[in-house]
Length: 174
Image 1: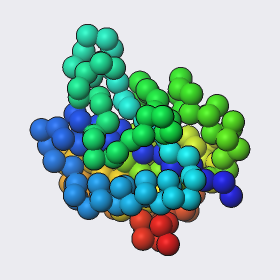
Image 2 (image 1 turned 90 degrees about the vertical axis):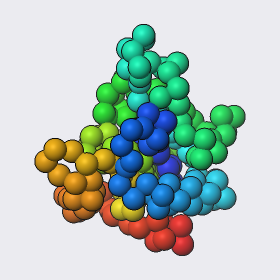
Image 3 (image 1 turned 135 degrees about the horizontal axis):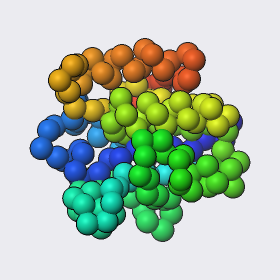
Image 4 (image 1 turned 180 degrees about the vertical axis):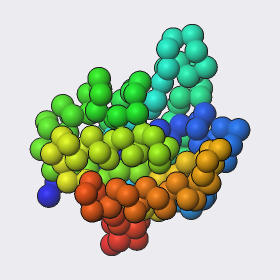
């Protein structure tokens, strides 16, 4: 299997926004470990940025949509793409780029668990990829119905089996 690592929406307005994501410190640490492992093994890295309409607080130029500096993105080596929908494949270059690199398996981490992570896991499966969701490297914030902890645990359970293989950061980097 040829892997690619996809980091979804780890951007200023979400990760460093007014609401602190669930397990923010450990999730960021785990994502950084995944990136380090990907780089050392030659695994291609893809970073998704979710943007909104021009002129909005989430426009492509807005500081809120910029990837967080803690990721140490290498703009010359890593693939960064803009998305406007929860599905990282919809109207983006992702599928084309994965096919060009003959990627079979997509390893997924990032934000927000119940929206973009969930939607992209399902879409990747539908597109024919083997999908690995890193159970301790995705996060979200509380919503009126559920705590972020419950959202993460629920999605790990719901997606595992039919749509993804669930692994921990430790398992993937080993």
